[in-house]
Length: 234
Image 1: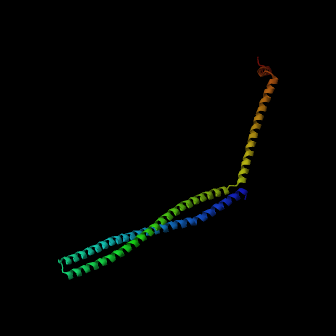
Image 2: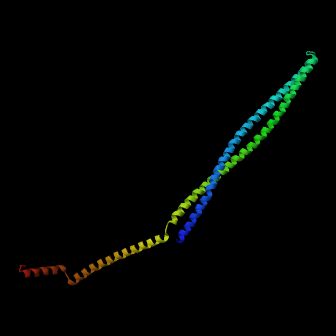
Image 3: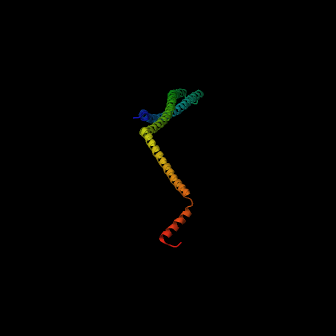
């Protein structure tokens, strides 16, 4: 194996090694993104539910607050009526006491609603932070996945080129070119030789004709001699 083949084989091996190392991270990243998206969906659903409870607690808080205030006003009115003689004093005190008991009941419910509202709002804040983090992680992993896939494509292309180059026998190609050069040189030399021979033949005929003189006169003399030999008239 020549030096070029060894170099190409090394490059091919490195490309395959890089590709093998990239395959698992891509699968892991894809699975990680799927898991994160599932967590994101679950977190969004949970936050919606907690927000609903926070809204309900806020509404309960306002309702209990209004009820407590209403029963406090009723107790005041009952005491005023009893004081004015419009209501029996004993009944006024009893009913005012009942109204104040109701006020205390709704005041306690109002406090519980407030505590629940505060707790739920805190949960919403925590979930909102988690959701933002999940979205950021998903974006990061998706960008990383695109980069890894691009690296895989480059590695595959490099591997393909190296494989093709590794199959090229440089020495045999050079030898073939040299043989073609020799053949062409021989053909060119042969063409030149035929040209020289043709030129020499033509030059020789010209030289002979020049030495003999006028070819037309000689031809006439030859014709007269032939007729004399045959006894023909001139």
